[in-house]
Length: 124
Image (cartoon, rainbow, N blue to C red):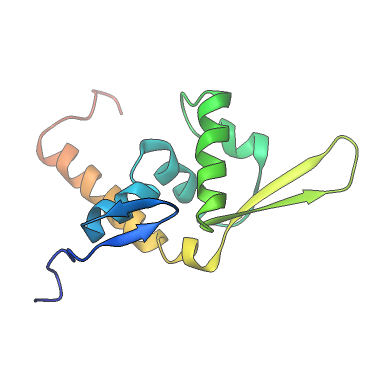
């Protein structure tokens, strides 16, 4: 098997079986909001409200779902400060930080594709 071939042995993770390593990776970070959360945390910890506001069109429910999923998969860590009102910060874990180059490369690919296909709106 070549290095870039998709790994097809069974991966069992939290009660779910994956028969493709790419499908497993996409399960962890593949939805729109998880990847955007990782992108916005790339420069360091952010407060919960600041992080949510930095992501266009995310509902409270979807933010909570996505950030909790990233926490459960140990890609993001949550720190609660014992102050009133409560202050919560999120940061990438070590394994979460290892995803940043991949997310940045995907971002560049999107920019290149949009530019090559003239998809940017006039004036932007």
